[in-house]
Length: 316
Image (tube, rainbow, N blue to C red; front, side, top):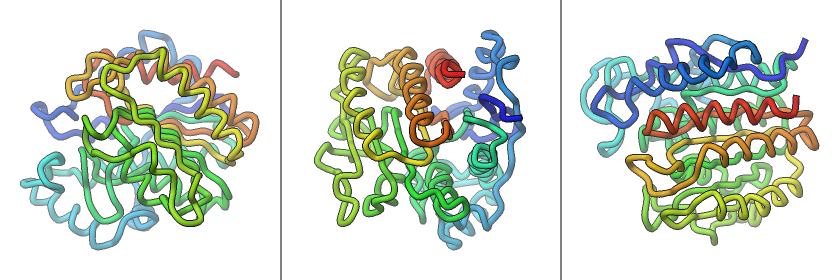
């Protein structure tokens, strides 16, 4: 029997963090889970356990040399994996491999028909490159999911939608010349926020020209503007007719996040999830996986991610 929505929960996911003093701290997963329970969502979904990725899984997107470097620094437990945003805390390889493996497990479950859709809260690590960490992201589970869908499951066209405040540069540039990967990315304008990329003129390269839609938003942008732009995004996705949807639903685009400047609400995230579920029903047999992404105000994170779950359930 196919579950309408599978949600991946477990302490192992919560271990992906960089300590109390870091924005990506240990309170994020418990904040999400408390609101998930308060809303009574457990009774409406199928709960699955986290899964740790193997080296073979990680090799779908990352270079072996990079994985070896992460392992070494993870064991050492000091220093940084990048230029200062992503600390090499003890055990970070194992924790990041759980995020990666759980996203891959969610993709596998949806493709196998055990779940119609799936949600992974601590996931959506969209800044990591094939050979480097960046922006709190060690292993890029979004990129791994795209590679798995193409190479392991034979999905011809994949749509990646990102509503995190930060441009999903690790995904965008990995597939910038791939016409089979449609990308829609809402984010704060790179002139004001890390990583400084994602201009509207960036629409794909070579054979993929016109397959990417960047929607940079000025600081203080609210739901009214974002919802207006969503209609354009939806038409763009409908024309692409992908066979699978991935949603990175970072909550740092909500008003009050400590490191960003947008003013969206959880209602926008719920709306996007519900509309993507409807689009997936049109072209992809309902197949969609949503990944939590960023978000550093705990109330915002809890509201946005649980709103996404409710939006994914609306059509079932």
